[in-house]
Image 1 (cartoon, helix red, strand yellow):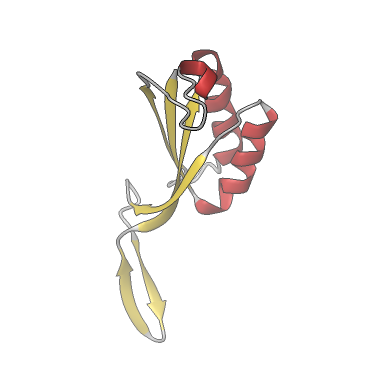
Image 2 (cartoon, helix red, strand yellow):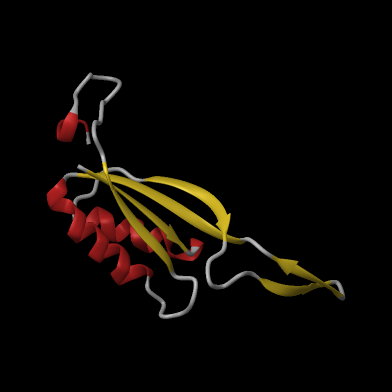
Length: 112
């Protein structure tokens, strides 16, 4: 089992959720986050005053999947989240040692 963590531009969230649903991914946790990478923020003008936006708004998706669903999920995320511009985001894949469904006590892939 793997945990896929994807950091994306907020306006891509619905497209990614839809693409993941189409391939059979059943659960996604979404968090609104802020951060920066190579973009390093930017300056904006508000009521005549210039200010620096250091941390850009992003969304973080956390998706627990069986090993055989990792590549299809990654491909689906990349396919719909890619704009070709800086700041499209990142995908991290980590091992999951154990998953437990609280309601039923199921463990492992049955709990996903």
